[in-house]
Image 1: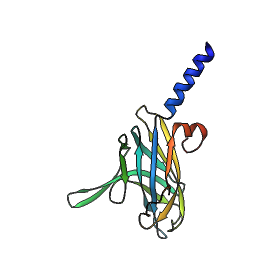
Image 2: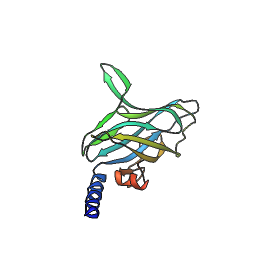
Image 3: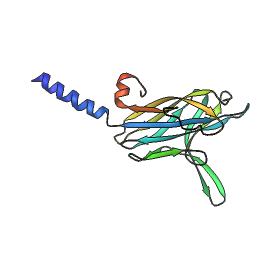
Image 4: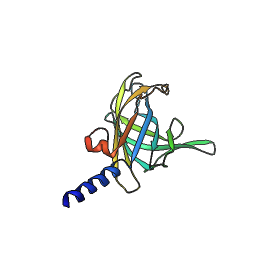
Length: 166
């Protein structure tokens, strides 16, 4: 009896493990010149069941924040956001002139053609946090979308196996 109950609980837990899926595609970071202290990271994010992007980290930056740029009259304004809503099943674009991950206090120049590690932090509707770790290409313009290029897919099952989310 206890074994059947344990099996049923394990099956329920495994179905919950697949409940939260976040997919990141076409990620890239804008190249910098010597002495430049900030740049942006851009990508497409889709959360199957809805989530929030609550943070990011780059080993090459002292600070990484989710930002929004928008026009206020004739002035382009940028501001840090505590989180970015990712509505269920809808792709949210992080792109120049809009939402992006701002990297500040850069520790080194980011030359075109290099790659940088990026960790994105998400929170689902129940408040559970997860991470997606990527290697992101550095470019002067958005790279042409290539199948699987700089893409990361994460779910709670991957976290159990240490694949992408921690």
